[in-house]
Length: 458
Image (cartoon, rainbow, N blue to C red; front, side, top):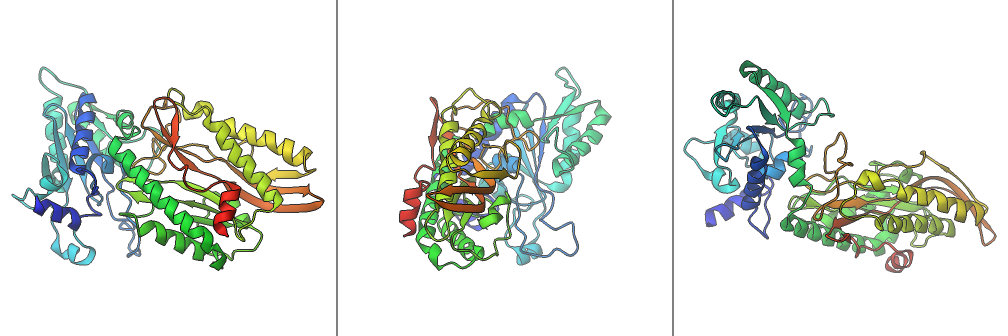
């Protein structure tokens, strides 16, 4: 037992595990659940190479991001691996590169095949480990078995997306097609079967998500009173990232966005290097990974600690739109069904409060809606099928979604006799856990109200 604990520490970012529960059992449970749905064998491919590995000039300091489907079933966070599920034998086989001590001398410990060594089986919980060089001979042997005899089938599965082209999963499909053609078998995608399980979080993953929320909350609360000391977006970003990562067990959920003033009108702004200006807003989009789960939070705050009247009006319109949207969030509906509700509310309130109430005007940088108001959260920060974003999937208890209404454009208004004119981007994002009767806002403790933000910034 002590040996496995030592291995978990040694391979802590290569095999993702939790200190709160036995991750090996969770991954095994997921593999068994999927195998029960499969009518033939199935192949998953991890990312083929380290980032930049296919380019001669790319060296170091590029973050490795594993395929979320592969992480979900194995916890293995390194390049060049495959997983094969054989439902007839209820057997999972992990294919890894051969052990390479010289490479480890440069990059640290990696899972590597060694003959007659069961340490990877002991660590990960798979049934068998083989060298990656044997993957296609193994697949061909399975095709012979499944394609012949009394219980012959005409297909095998691979994990790929029907509508998303050009990635390593499509390359897996192409290779599988060439191998199976010899046995008059075709390739089917197992993505829909996979997401049936993956989009619904187990209690252990829900607990990890709650820890991620607490870390994010603490970091944001630490940031607010320090804003007066920051001169640039970079200053604020580094502080926020440090506060999140020092309490997490891995990495950020995604690169933090810190967009001051009109920079917030760029949805995926990543420069984070411009001066902060007194009187402007700054939009933060941030989160942390804990275990294999993430937080995904957006907050928009005044650089100087005080919203001006125009900023406050627009901010509260966005904040109220989230409340309106959340009234219809419940099991049994899809994100596609309810996706326009908050945007319709925002347009209505701009006309009522800004145009008619403050003799103002606005010019949005989009038509009707700037982005989806919700996405799934799980092993991947934007969980679900990347082709469809799984927007047609009906919500079920245990699913975790974002709620992120926003407003981006040029605005003017006359309030208390003073004219305000400003380019403004506002986004307020919380994470909602779908429950039996509705949802729980697991981000509810993270400050969002105008009065609370201003008080904490003081």
